Image 1 (cartoon, rainbow, N blue to C red):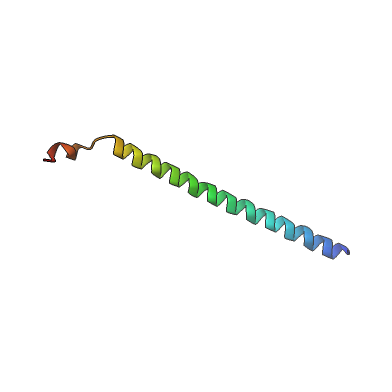
Image 2: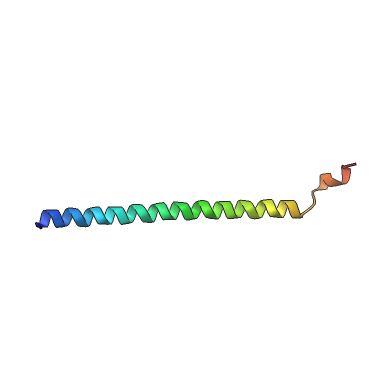
Length: 56
């Protein structure tokens, strides 16, 4: 294995690791958004709104 091949292998591996970390970060951010939205929905369902007084 020449130095050129070794350098390309290291650069390729570094790029793959960086790509995987970025993808993992994006997935975790989306999961966090889903959890926050779910908590908002649960909170909205738990607390009665002011329009409930007018329902007959």
